[in-house]
Length: 116
Length: 115
Image 1 (cartoon, each protein chain N blue to C red):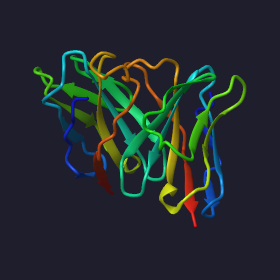
Image 2: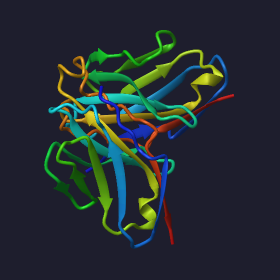
Image 3: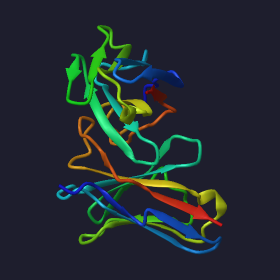
Image 4: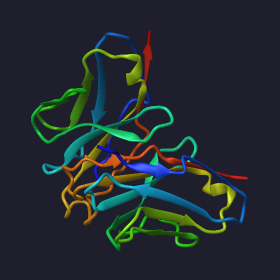
């Protein structure tokens, strides 16, 4: 599986936008970029995913670089409830993942702290 | 709609005892995944099951661990003769399909403590 690189931690203030970067320089053309987050003492929660175009949903926006070697998760107005570890995960085709594209491979993620 | 339910939320066992962790997937989901999160580490895939079938158990320790997802009832992760190193949070997830575009919905986890 292609590897992702994220900063260990980031800090934000409440009500301000947050841009969480992810580098994935070895991404293949068929890999989807997924983001999950894990709030303290909870299970991971899906945030958003995309392939090539930027994506928006009620939780966040995903900006994907033109060469797809990096992406940015954007929280438009951070709240205290957004404090969590954010994981950027690539999900490839069955062939690329050796038949196991159902597996989510979690790295260390980015710990987002939101200051009141 | 009920999400993924796991019970118990907290489980304390002494070394050598058995631990049974239950997971009820989202209604209508027939694909279940178990992940383990050791203290200060990321989540690691353990096993993927469909109804009555183990599809991939490559992430599960070869001994003492087993999983099932019967036709009726919840998925069970069973750990026999627990050791201190089994202390971790165990998360179950489900999805309608195993495709790379499908969301996996996670439960709140079972936190296992082995004394």
